Image (cartoon, rainbow, N blue to C red):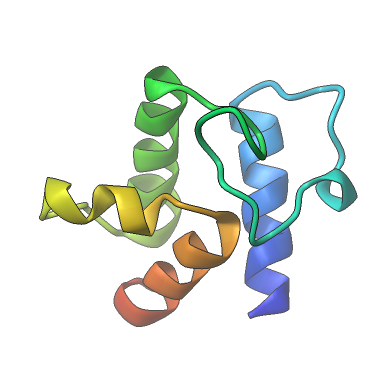
Length: 86
C-alpha cells in the first residue's frame, strides 16, 4: 500500500505540474481538494480521473462516490487496491 501511495504522489506531481511539491510534502490522509491539503480544483479532478483510467484501468462508474474516492491519496490508493490492477 505504501508503495502505491508513493507512486500516486509522484503521478499527481508530474501530471498536475506541481513542481514546487515533493512526495514527502503530501500527507496521504490530507484532503486533495478545498482549502486544506493540496487545494486542487475540478480541472485537477479530471486529470486524476485520467491517471486512474490510464495507469490502473479504473473508471469512476458512480459519480456520487467520487467525493469519497478522491478525498485523499490514501482513499485513492484504497480504491485502486479494491478495484484496479495496481
